[in-house]
Length: 225
Image (cartoon, rainbow, N blue to C red; front, side, top):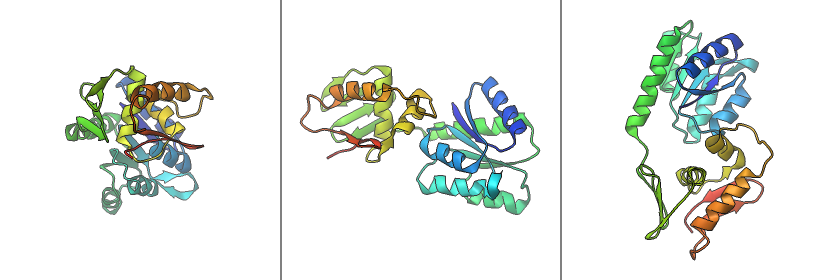
């Protein structure tokens, strides 16, 4: 499970990060608003833990509003010293899934995160992703183009599924690096180009319609013609 933690207090951030990592989570931390918004909107997360009082007078609820306005429904738990009833109600009405006041017990935070991720899992991802005549069976990780099954390597499948879940939208290199390789920076290699070339040879080469498109200077998109 991948967690994004946006928290300006380094001591609190390290406490949460170490606790979540001991519980099996992969945690990325950010200590300011602009970077937090960038990571929240460009990465793929199972849960986001979001502080409200961030440097520069940034309110975490503004980040939350920007995330929700882009159609991102990742579970978000707000963690804040702003603990009045009005603050908690405002946080929930702004699109958060939970609101925990500081000071807090880590065990309670962990239990709330586990509840959010269980709830998201019950909603479930669609078992079938369809783009034109391309079909992905996400439960069994099988791919078909028309009636032909296509064998993919694990990384190729991850790339294709990520593109399919964002079909019709432009996916940047940074988004792919974060979602498929777990990098939140560009390691300046051609790993994406190599994998994408292999994927295209399997998905598009022998078919009359090309589904994977390059958006020059930006990234890629998977879409029906």
